[in-house]
Image 1 (cartoon, protein in one colour):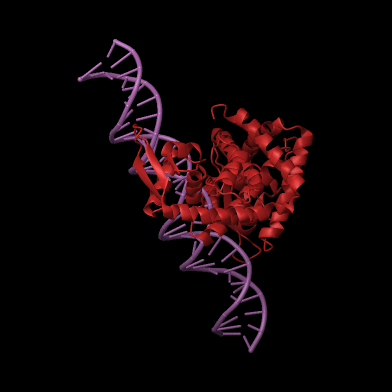
Image 2 (spheres, protein in one colour; image 1 turned 135 degrees about the vertical axis):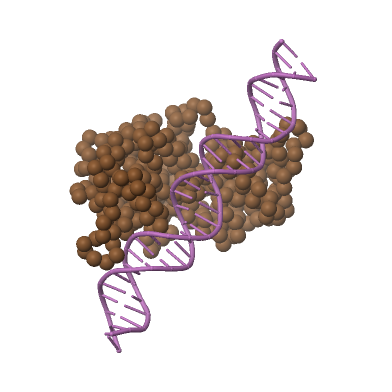
Length: 184
Length: 184
DNA sequence: TGAGCTATGTTTAGAGCTAAACGTACCAGT
DNA sequence: ACTGGTACGTTTAGCTCTAAACATAGCTCA
């Protein structure tokens, strides 16, 4: 979120360790009675969880010698299966960033020898981006580290609770996709 | 976060409208059997929801003539109640960004006449930041717009589901606070 | 008195992102 | 062949953030 980071709207991000989302909602009710605060207890924790996961992941990745943006790129390629090669356009589609950002990410990764660019034989102006052996090895290590760590992080909830949470999140996400960007 | 943005780790952000988190987990199971993928269906939707809410909020705020970072600042002051005044240190504590970022946010807001800085009479190097009338009026309008909008966005879930989701998110967040940063 | 220590705020360098402007490559209609 | 339109990738300007270096105010203890 680049936008990442922080700043929330009406409720966003205040008090990382301080007041709870419920307390923020209560404060708005006190200061501005009548304003609808029902969304705060959903949006605020999502915001904070996203940041906690992001910060923790950055710590893990720093130790692995890679950054989140580069791993995002390499992971999409790795997960696509052999020959670990996609066009820039496809990379953009499978990422939450703009085409310009993808172009810069690929340029950085190429400079570090993690991917290689080549014109698409299928024609057009398309460019194929492929993992190099170095990139393949790095993504392998990094993914193990990240998934292992995050697997630990969610054990505070029971398997049943995790399933329930995943279901609710997915339902909300699906609904929002239709509600916000029918163009998506 | 700043990363705000985007790029996720192993699963992060790919396919805003494409493959589901479940499909990403399945792809990793296929490409790299044995890797723990249980966290993916929780972390990925949280990531995507955070970005959807952030992008939508930015659209709302652009129309109101303010940006998310500034609203974050003004909202904390407004919600703190009269005299709508806090020290920079307190602003940093109630926000998810660094002290440097707060300093820059306050400087921008002061330049626009939304807040006013003054030395803390209590001594020390503390600086008090207070809402101006202009800032007060702007935050009033903006908060109404943002909370109204977000209240609509979550109606895809029933009140019971929203309560359940809020509870699970809060439990996960509380657990992670103890697990990641006991220093927090 | 004054040498450290702690707490606060600000400044600076650098990173990575978005939005918009560009530069090509191919295709469709005439 | 020409003219436009569409698709794609790259480049650039500008923004806001983080991390780290600074600068300053009060406090503690000899």
